[in-house]
Image (tube, rainbow, N blue to C red; front, side, top):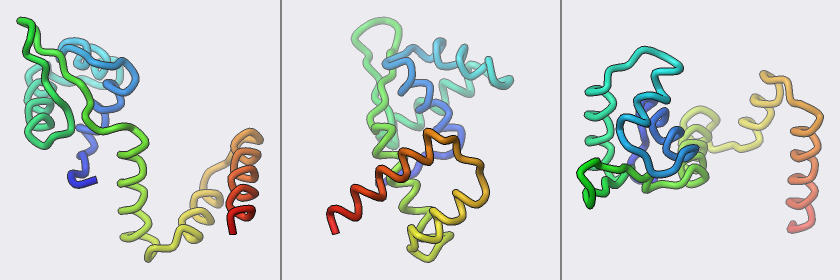
Length: 124
C-alpha cells in the first residue's frame, strides 16, 4: 500500500467498506454516532482522501458519491506489514505472541488460528 491512511481516514474507510458507495452526508451521519464531528471536516477529509487515491468521487449526479479505492484486506495487510517491520523487527512470530498474550481470544478465534497454523504446516 503506497499511502497509509490516517486514523481519521481509516474511520471513513470503515464506513465505506461497511456501507458501500456513500454520500458525504451518509458517512458523516455514521461517524457522528461514535463521536462529534463536523460535516465540513468529513467532506475535507474525503476530498484529501480522493487526492491520495484512497477514495474516488463519482460526480455523475448532483450529489457526489464516494467509493473506497482500497480494499479492507489490502489496507489491513499494508498496515500489518508496516507494524511488523517497525515494532517487531519484521518478526510475525513476535507479533503473534504479543497479540495473543495481550488480548483474550474467543474459542472460535483460537480454532481459526489453529486451522490457519495447520494449513501453514501442510504447505511447508
